[in-house]
Length: 251
Image (tube, rainbow, N blue to C red; front, side, top):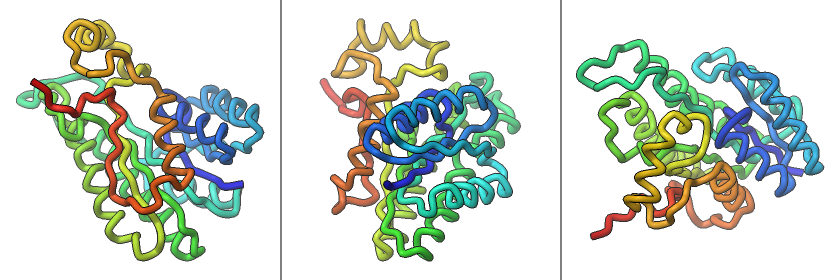
């Protein structure tokens, strides 16, 4: 059975991805930052589907934690064929870019961008050393190209993940390791719970997405499973939009 690391797997999109992979027969390393109870619930759900789960707490902004996460993942399953860089945080307070401070910026860059950049480096080197023709998927956001001036730090980190995908796709292709960006749109999670009324109006009244519904973590999970199943073997560096058509420009 193949094994995957899913970062930020205790809630939201990460939870949806971890469970979707388990349903497809993957063992899963459930990484979480602080909520052990939620991670245990995800691990139990994975095991209900006949797959194995290994919980690993790690703050991805910390080098020592990233190193430990990889070591414990390989110790648990022997080999890792898939890394899903999903963990990410939003600003604690949405602030106009003319007023926003450095503390939030540094926090988001550390977790959302620096973490996956160097975690990918660690896992890629392990894959190369083992001769594993694995896959790396990074979950970004429509905020990679959509300007939100009251959360510029978040947008900057998501835009950076797009270049992360291109860089690693170009570098790792010779080793048989394909790299992808999955770009969610408006997804129903606790992160979007505080702006539900706004997005309800945009989706259902104004038609901001051609497919007029909220996305779900399961929608993102299915896209990751399609990649993990090898259905895109002749693609790398590819962006897969899971956004109800938000990226379309229509008149």
